[in-house]
Length: 272
Ligand SMILES: [Zn+2]
Figure 1 (cartoon, rainbow, N blue to C red):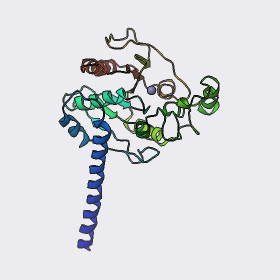
Figure 2: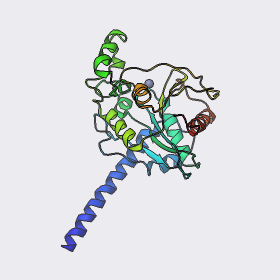
Figure 3: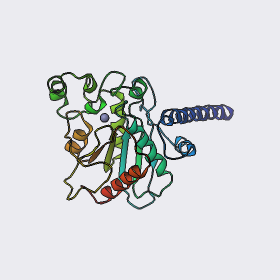
Figure 4: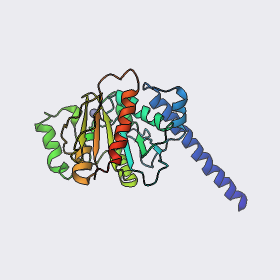
């Protein structure tokens, strides 16, 4: 009996080990293609620490992994960052990677969770949408989704294939993964990284004065049925900063460092 249990435990731990090796490899492969502002060791360091929630996989089964960096301070705020919800917005991957790598080197004031590749199939296929042709940023189950999402896509977007909201509210596995994260992590603030509109678009409480930021201007773009901004801010009171980068990356990392620090300060200022 004892021998049997030992064998069983060995078997379970071998399986867990091979899962973590393949997750590490997925992280190295998928983030390795994005420009980094650190040395290669920084990527190795984050990829041994990434985790994956059960069920967090794309339509084709690619893992959707994340990194947690907890603040050592008491009662830190929680910030959730997502990049590449649109698979063809490549510079977004560099910012997601940069913030992960930087968090390994600083004592953060806040607790951060970063999901760097929300739409791995879109990245592989070089498409905005997921493998089923759904725009994930129109698929969140907002209360108006059933009544308005497809109607608006047909009338206002003239059925643009890049903006198809999907077949059912929250019907895509990538969106279900994000919702799992939101419900478990309970972020105080969410950052969604996109390109190429060159603005900071904030869905949140009115700021007395938007913090100055040299690299991108603040500009509200509004939100839509099924968009993250409507789902989180309009319906759940969780602020969302949509970071719309330029289509080219900055030469050095100063702009990315400043933005991370600016977000940290904004969240500390108690937005709710
Ligand atoms: Zn986008």
